[in-house]
Image 1: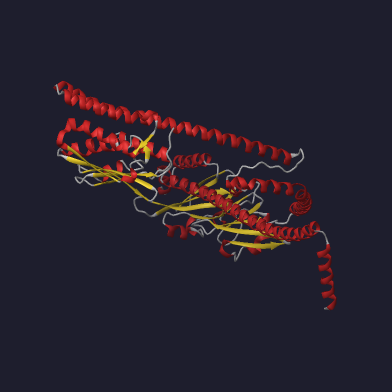
Image 2 (image 1 turned 60 degrees about the vertical axis):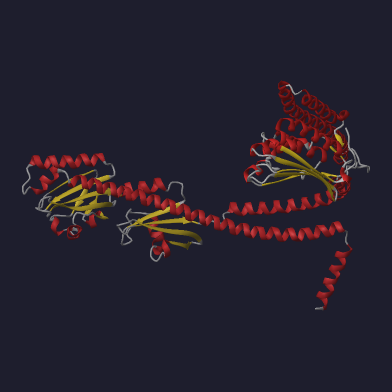
Length: 589
C-alpha cells in the first residue's frame, strides 16, 4: 500500500514538473486513446449489427422472391390444368367408356400442344375411371398406377372436389429414369352435368425447373436454398446442402435462427409456401470478422494513431506560432463590435498573419471613408427629399387659392379680390421664408389664418376657426408648412362632406420635451377602417391623403423619429390630428 502511494506521488511530481506542452500531449493522448478504443468497440458492434440486419433483409427478400416465383410456377401449372379440365375433347374422352382411336389421338394432341407450349411442364397424365389413360412427357417416366381408383391420392382428390393437390412424384406413383423428382399438380375432373368424377389429371414440373428458379434468383447471393415438402423431404433430389443442414430444419423459432456449424455462424431463414405446407430454407453465412476486415481494422487503428500523434504535434507547434498573434489581432478587433474602428498597430512579419493585419487595417480605412461618404449622401438625400416633398405640397395650396380668386374676379367683387390677393401674397412670403425650411410657430399660425381667410371667401360662414396657442410656444422654430395641410384636410375631408357649418381649432402647448400641435374639427369624422388607412403602417401607400402623407414624411425625415403624430376620430364626431414635435435647437438648411 505504501509502495503504491509512493509510486503515485512520484508520478504526480513528475507530471507537475514537466513542461505544459508535454502535459497537454500526455492528457490529450490519454483522452484520445480512450476515445479510439471506445470508438473501435462501437464501430465493431455497429458493423456487426448492420451486417446482420443486411443479411437478414437480403435473406428475407431473396427467399420471398423465390417463394413468389415458385408459387407463380405452381399457379401457372394449376391454371393450365384448369384449361385442360374445361376442354371439350378431354371431357369427351373421359366420359367415353371405350374411346375411339381417333378421339384418343385428338385428346392426346390437345395434351401435347399444352405440353410444348409450357416448357416448365415436364409431363401430363390423364386417367379415366375405366382403367385407361393418356400421357405426354419429355423424359421417360414410369407410372405405377394401374387402377386410378386404388391410387393413394385418389380419395383425397375426391374430397378436394376439383381442387388441386401438390406432391412429390404424385406420392411416389411416378418415377423418372434419371432419378430426378417431379412436382406433381393433381386434380380430379368432374362431369359438368352430374358433377361426378370422370377422371384424374396430373401435371408434373421437373425439379430442374424448380432448381433453375432458385439458382437464378439467388445468383451471387452467397446463400444456400433448400425446398422441403410438408414432411421435410427434399423436393430437389441429391441436394448437397440438405444433409448438412438437416438437423436444424425442425424447431426454427419465428422462422429465423442463428446456428453454428464448424465454428461458422449461419442465419437460417424459413418461409412457407401458402396452401402446401412446403418450406423454403435459406442458409446464409455470417462472416463478420473476415481476414480482410481484421486487416482493415489494423490499418484503421494505425491511421488513427498516426493522425492523433501528428495532430498533437501540429497543434502544439501551431499554438505557439499562430495562436498568440491571432489573439492579439482579436483583441484589437473587439472594438469593432462597439463601433470603434481602430487600426491594429502591433508588429508582424510578412506572413499570412501580417497580411491579415494589413488587410484588416485597409478594411478599417475603407469603412471610415465609406461611413463619411454615406453620411454625406444621407444628408443630401434627406435635403433632396425635403425639397421634393415641399415642392409637392406648395402647388396643392395654390390650386385651391387660385380657384377662389378666379371665382371672385368673375363675380366682380374687386374688394374681395384685393383681400384675397393680399392674403395670398402674405401666404407665399411666409411659405418662401427666404429659403429657410423652418419658421416660428407664430408665422405658421399666421399662414393658416391667411389660408382660412382665402377659404372663407369661398365657403363663407360654413367655416369658423379657433386658436389655443400657449404664449411660450410662439417663437419656437418648427418645420414650415406642416399645419396648413392639416387644416385643408379638415375642410375637404371633415367639414365639407358633412354639409353643415363647422369649426377648426388649432392648439399649441409644451409637454416635457415635446411641442404638441393639434388641428381639430367637428366634421364628419372617420370610422375604424378610414382611421386605419392613415395609420403609420398604411399612410405611405395612401394616395388619397397626399397632403397628410407628405407632411408626416417631411416631419419624420426632418426630426428623425417615427412617433410624430396621432389621429383621434369617430364617425360623425369630428377628427383631431396631433403632431408631436421634438424640442431642439433651431435648424436651418
